[in-house]
Length: 319
Length: 319
Image (cartoon, rainbow over all chains, first blue to last red; front, side, top):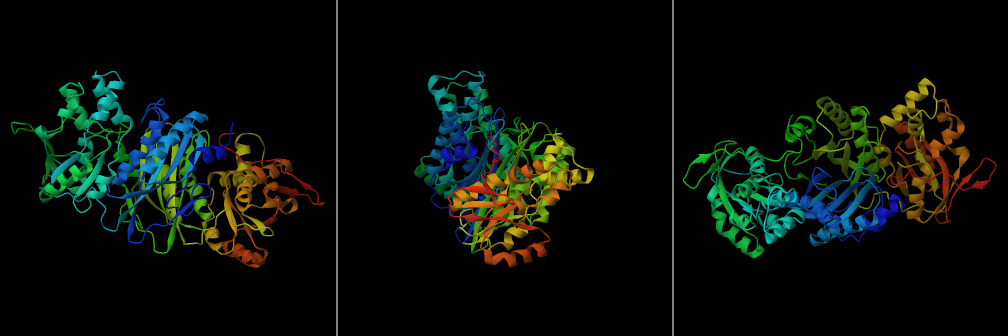
């Protein structure tokens, strides 16, 4: 069996673009640019909890990094460096080869250097810490939302959750819909470019990893606001095209995580700018409601104007 | 059961000393000091592989951070920030309380802000990524050793390995020896101050996490050197006081990891300075041999001058 060191060398050592010292010493060394704040985020992904152990390793490699990139995107930060912790039940060369290919696909697409890691035997577990940069004072936190700000979401939230439901045989989708939903689940696209474009525009932002309603709750708590979501404004039509029934589609849109779309607030005078960004990035941006002064009060507005409390909360990894 | 968010808030949120935005957003924000390189290292620790699942949680909290601090110490870097990934089979408030107490004991002792994390359900697994700073160009890598440099080791390597042998009922130690070895195993002291003192002195350095002989091999490979270790110079006497037999003590000294001592090379004209640092830090520094020009050739020199190849290699988490 090849040693841990051989493994690391063979699968995870690639030339680094902007790192002084990469994989292979006690620590990596890099030089943040002057005038920048460092943005750091970490995720621990456990087989059986966050992904199926038999997930195609190339998809898993992509997604492991992509979900972390999404956290930086949600701050408006430029991703720069990542480190990887990897526990494996055994050494499977083919698996490692495909996993690292997926990981480096994502890393090179977004200009990330993998600068360090740790591999060990254990239940299949992935740990990523990602580092990015953002000009001092320009990061977009969860805390800046103001009553009266519009509430926006990127892309098509709900696709990944529909895909998961289909994988679990809890719904039937048409073949094209199934393919689209599975792709969304297995190959999420972190909204890095959008995050950067929203500096100076979004007042508060986070990524939807645990469900739109649940994650919105975090934004409201931090911003000290409430919100009203306009149900007719939700981008439901695209979900219905997959063949999902409306109740499930709505539930996936409001409660499903795993799409890694950005949810953000912005003053109404940025609407035109936002629609220009949407066209330029070829990425739908949907205005789904607004922030209110009712601290942490989240309401859904029906087409007829009735206001209802949401019945769906966020996904909790310990619930 | 309390939610993931409650857990994080209750046990892992403490005031940060030098961080702009800490736990609770998509990413933490911090400002590295001008003129500094960032040093980053990560470890993934799995119950059953790296520690016993029933390890006292307070010790485990300390050790989880300490072993990462040791990586920064081995670069001559000042530790600054850490993020924690934590997978738990279930939510045990007492366990979390003790674990976080141990972690923060270590963090506050070494001036580290815990700036982010991720908790989830899963087999007990700990992931730490640590960030430190070192003036540009002053980091001590594994690569700078030169033939003729002395080879030094800090503290008392072998104690932790003896402790592990005793826990596994593979040896008997006297009561004081057992207490000392178990303490070394459960509460390793990262040599942060020594690492900083060795800037400008050590030509190459790493921490002994996988065994002195095995880790020395990495230094030799990176430095393009060989080495001769003088067996009579090894700090064996302190190990024998524990009641361990000489063969096991020598094996633990040369092959045992987990003490997190620093192993480094330095030109001979630094001997006096190093002994001054040893006194000032109240930490033994032992000159155990020297680097040679015989690339990757590692030999042990007996008292009578005979040269032998070592029979012990490093610990490999996949071997």
